[in-house]
Image (cartoon, rainbow, N blue to C red; front, side, top):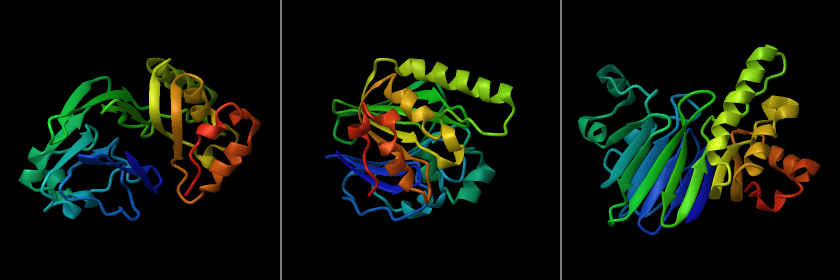
Length: 235
């Protein structure tokens, strides 16, 4: 498995027989083998996680499937707006929270998907394939905003922790998790909670847009001391 950061929360994962493009928003997508089946995942409709440009980009791709959160409307008027043709629509699976799905990689192996409910919009992905378990949070995060109503922040904390309980003790080979400097002093709370709940081998911070230095900041923070060796440095 080869992992490439693209931008914000976007990543490309290339395996022997297939390629996954997750939450592409903007940035340069690296070249990959067009003989491999492509899976395009979008966790929710927000513009920084879903870019309908993918439909035009891969309109002539030989093997592609789209796995889209159900809040990305696929009604005819939206399909027209997105530039999605009928062939692409037929290759699209809408997914909702707390469900399980399976996909064929084109070589007879199965990709298993479980979804969690986001604390913002859409879903988070838990993907199992070839003995690996990969978690992409989307916008499932401990969003704590200074100046927000105390009850709102308390409800957010409770909702986030409730979803994280579904990962308690679970082994994750790779986790893609927000580390958002806009949250000020609370920027690390969500990632830290996941690392102390699940058994994570490698964590890729994301959702920091043009402030990748937040990764260095967190790696130097005493709170990350016990697992900072698992935090993949910005590239």
